Length: 247
Image 1 (cartoon, helix red, strand yellow):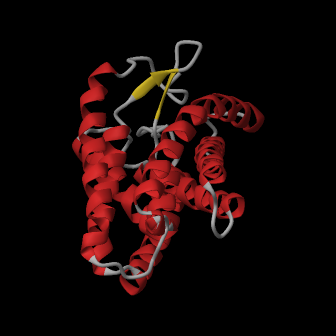
Image 2 (cartoon, one colour):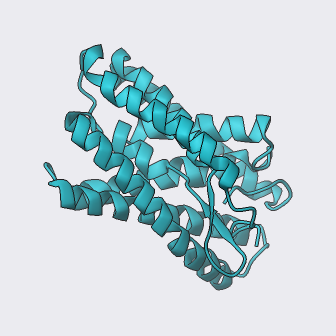
Image 3 (tube, one colour):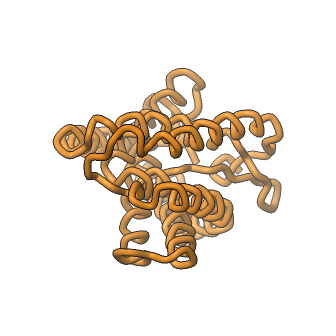
C-alpha cells in the first residue's frame, strides 16, 4: 500500500508531509519523556521484525497480493507513540534504500502506514481488550486491531488519492477498503499470533511503559529476533502479484 512518486499532487503531498512531521515530532518528545531506556532494545527489535515481515507478500484474489504492515502489532507491543517512530523508521529505510514508496510521497506513507494504522489499531485494541484480557479475548482484540488498522490506513490512502484527483471518492474508498478488508485477515492473524506469543512469555510487556529490568525482556527479545530471521527467510517465498494499490 506504499504510494509511489507521481500519484499525489503538490498540495496533497506537502500537506501530508507537514502533518506527518508534526505528529512524528510529537512522538519523539513523548517517547523521550516516557520510554525507559531498557525498552529501546524492544523498539529496535520490533522495527526489525516489522521490516522483515513486510517482505512477505501473500496472494489474496483477483491477481493481487497483500503484505503485513505491522502498525497495530507495534502499537500493541510498544504503545502508540513508540509504534509511530518504529513505523516511520521502517518506511524511511524502505523509501531511501529499497525504493519502496516514493520520496515525495514519504509523508503520505508515514501518515497512512506509520500514524493512522498504529493509532487506529491501538485504539481498537484498548477498547476491545480491556484492562486485563484473557487469552481468547487478547487474541480477538489483536486480530480486530490489526484488521481495523489496515483498513483505516487504506481508506486514508484513498482519501489522499482522491484529493489529488487520481480516484473518484466512492470508487477509491470502496476498492481500497474491499481489498484491504481481505488482506487485513492475514494482518490480523499474524498480529494476533505475535501478540499471543509475547503475552505468554511476558504479558506485562504488552504496551507497557513502566520501567523493567533488562533481564525481563531477554526472552521476548530472543523470540522476536528469531521471528525476524524466519520472516526474512520466508520472504523468498513471497507472492510476486501486485498489491491492491498497484493493481
